[in-house]
Length: 548
Ligand SMILES: [Zn+2]
Image (cartoon, rainbow, N blue to C red; front, side, top):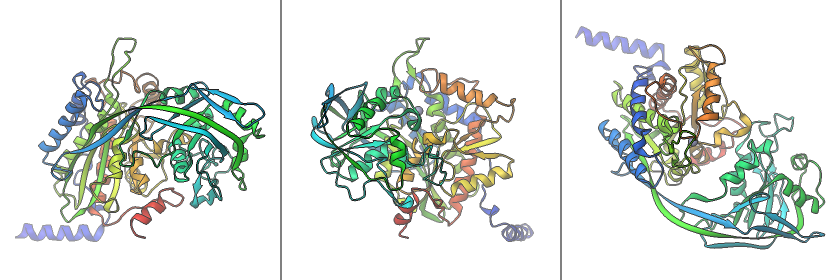
């Protein structure tokens, strides 16, 4: 009895002293590097053939993850199943050799590959633009929170819009214009296509410039030729523009000059009173599509919350990589993706283990979601966000793990797109306690926040966080971790040499995973719904979905 009373007293004292701390997990670092590494060893093994969707490697990968979920006692997350079908369509588009532009003093002929790339996601064998009038719409942005509308008073039905990459803030010298040099979602190419489709345009062509795009034309031309994967949609993507594409800067200069627009067109489009300019030119182009339909799978397990089971915290990590492809200099052709993203998927399993072993069960439900086809355009997470198994307005947060670093613990932590939402504040608090520094992206202009699976949750309003180790090693000299990071990007990222080795340093991965564990655990025990910060492009979407 005494013991019981003492416990009660202790509990009361704990409650009195700290409302914040009562919700912390009993152990704050239950995830071990060894456990993570044991799963990487399996997931990045040659026998999984690089974990490519639709291959025998997919079957092995999703069977392994679901078997681990079952072993841990997770409930199948999709109405009795550990799998969510993700129907996809592969479209191999071949544009006509040339794009013809008429209506100016003399016709302009642009060449496929060197001057432009074009494709269509409309599931049709053939699409065509025939004398479609061209309109320069500047950045092609409709952003109510920035009082910006490049399409104001414009009807672009049947027309083809020419838009600039990035947003008006980039290199404007004004940090308050959008987010200055930090790219907002309005700057991403995916947004440009979505907005042009909402406006009803027949075609949309993005003007490529290396600086605002953050990659050269070679990346645009190599990643946009050949087959592309999309989510299957009941409307067969007929709500999208017939033609989507990019144009090289020199070609765009030629085109705009023919309509009398010369000089710095970014400066022109950035002006507060900028109005879309009809070019009085017409474009013609056709694309032949080859279609192939297949189904891949997300893997989903859940742990039911003890008191608020109908509210959810989601952890995500993509299980896929590139399969078998071009061999490297050593003759290795299997893209094992040990870091990208066997370590994230491995950490997801270790995360689930930590939750199942927690002394006190989480009050809200925890979802463990391993998504497919991230490397093909974030498709598995896009599918989940469009077909959520758990209501989005009951989903508190998405915590994502993608390519955690293999260079040990760091004294700093990098939050992708830092400043977007209130989840950052929790990490800041933990970091402060542990004497760690929290930093943002190393290249904010590159739009990292829009480039992994958490983004698809953000897009539908769910606060999402993606985090990684920083560049100050806890155990090596200054500059070492940064060098490791750069070496990975230059020599192993998306290469066959991204391999598992028993010498891998899993401590950095565990450091990040443990912080995300602590965050998820704390959120699961709160009643709050952290929101988006002022200025975030996702704030209104969330408020609408929450019925505010
Ligand atoms: Zn990748």
